[in-house]
Structures are given as C-alpha cells and as structure tokens.
Length: 465
Image (cartoon, rainbow, N blue to C red):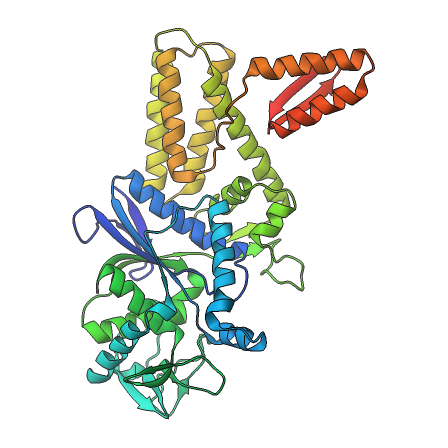
C-alpha cells in the first residue's frame, strides 16, 4: 500500500490512480533563463524517485514535464542580449538536460515547451471568460479571484475579505504571498517584446496559464499527480487550480505532492554568500554525479535539507563503497547451492525497503535497509559463505533497489582482479629495480581504470573508486 502526503488535503493518503494501472503525472519543469541550481534539482530528483518507485510498484507512468520558455526574466535577458526567445532558451534547455542526464534522472515521456502551446492557452482563457471567471482590461485578460470561492484551499491561506476586485491586479509572473490580487492570464503586447496574434488580442501568456494548458492537453482535464517544489504552492499551483477548474468545471488533480526547500551551508542559496551551487560546477570540481544524486535524495522530501560540501564528501565515500560492494558481489566465484540465512536477508531487505518507500517515500529508512544489507552481505563475503544461488539473489536485489535509487555505479568491463594484481606486481618489481618512471606509469594506468593504490607498512593495497 503506497501512501503519499497530499498538500491539498494535508493528509497522508493511500495512492490509487484514477484509471486502471496507469499514473498520469505532471511535474513543473525549469524556467530556462539561467542554469538550474541544486535546489531545483532536489525537486527534479524527487520527481525522478517518485517516477521510478511508481514503476517499481508495477504502474505504467505517463510523466509530463514543461519547459517554461517565456516569462518576464527570460524576455528581459533575451532582449538585453539581442537574441530571439528561442535562441536564448534553447541554450539553457540543452544545458538543463545535460545536468539532468548526468544526475541519472529518467527523461519524462513528454517534455512540452510553453511557446509551442499558445493556442491551448488561448482556448482556456476564452472558456474562463465565457464562464465569468476572467475579464479584459487594457488589452490584457485577468482571472477574477472572487469568482472562485475555493481559492486558497491548496495553500491553506484564508483570503476572505482580502480578495481584490478588478481595480487591483497583478501583471508580474511572480509575486509575494501578500499579493492576493486578480492574476494575469494573457498580457497585452509591449514594444520590443515577443508577442503572438490571437483571437483574444496580441500579446503573450502569463506564467500560470502555461502549465494548465500543457498538463491538460497531455494528461486530460483531471489527472493523478501534480508535483513540484514547495515554493510553487502559492501562487503558481493555487492559480493553476483556479483557472483549470474554472474552465472545465472538473476536479483538476487528485494528489498534489511537493518537496521542501533546500538550504546550502545552513542558509538560503546566494551568489553573494558563495553557497550557490550549480551541478556542472560541482562536477568540474571533481565531485561525481552519483554522489550529488545520493546527497540530494538522502532526506525525505517533506523535510527541509541542508546541502553542505562536507556532506557531499561523505556522499562520495558512500557511493564509492556501494560501487565497490557491487563489483565484489559480481566477481565472486562461489560453489553451487544456497544458504537459508542469506535467503532470509534478501527477503527482509526487500520488505524493509518497500515498507519505507510505501510510507510517503521515506528515503532515510530505505537507505538504512540498503546499508544494513550491504554490511551483512560483506560479512558473508568475508566468511566465504555465499553460494551460487545466493549470489544471484543478492545481485538481483541490488539491481532492484538501484532501479529506484540509481546510485550504484556501472560495472567496468574488461579487467578482473587478476589483471589488476598483475599490474600491481609489475609496479612493485619496477619500484624494487628503482624504475620509478614505470612505477608511476602503472599507478596512473590503474587510476584511469578506477583503481586507487595505498602503500602501507603491510604492503600495497588497492580499491576501486
């Protein structure tokens, strides 16, 4: 029984898809005006974890993500650089997916760009106007909040007595929680800004209408899951509900799921504070994508998380240990047979792993089950008690868990322990003969193969990165 916390009801609920075994899920994607930072990627990796676990549970997932490629910030920067909207946003869309892929996130079934769906947005604005929820003023169209009595139920904000009328409106794509005013659906054209000629006038869409149009086009007027960062609850997701349900008269989304804020070194990320981290910068500094992924996934999504460089170093150690464990498990040459104790370990680990993730994706508990499993299996490896059937079951469990977490490294093909040992023996002979050039050459070769050497009093030791 898979349970998720639903922001709309403020309860942990048993997940039941609306239709059969297919989950229709929309996750708000990036606004491509700059590089996505690790706070953004905490949300995207949470979405990846949710997607992967739904598939693990046997559901077919239709996952849709948008690319917001028109808003105030994008237009300002594109105009300043004398670039077209598409030229400016293409570069950051490509860079986003480079980081997205590097972190091991699975691509959604559909990735939709806002500027490719202007007609769908115009249609929703027309329906809202016909239903009395929208009005035109000076070439722009606004949503009339006081026409939608349940406005505020997602963010749990009480706007009674504070909702403005047509004389008070907000034109900005983003605004503060205190700005409880009619929000813009369609903006009248301005000089030197991109615009579209439509049946509701020449202009461009407001930010909020974009996701309603794209999600309903791809997933239907009512779908299962809408996810994103907690910062999107108000105003973005609150406005999505109002305009979508105002247009269709139907319930928009069954489960609203959000991930909490990420801090960096105990504070809100800021370039001035020097704690603003971009994925590609961390990789260029020598950190592995798997360690970044592990750290960003390691806390439960409803908990605020503090990303630190010390924490990232610790994550590097953890993922290296997991990779080494996987390699050792594959390189075993056990005798035929199986053992009851290891069969029980596999069963117990799988049960604890699933119980944890069924409980609103309790990642810390699931990782705890994984690390207990690794520790006990390492003890069995050291004691040479693993049989052939055990090895198969243990490897299958590792692959099963990694289908959700994506934190184990790929097995490096083409060299075995015997090959490594032969190179180490040659290096030792070269050192004894004072052929230090050859000795260093072999060390560098082993490093490129992912092998780290440690010269100790007891002799040379090696391990995989």
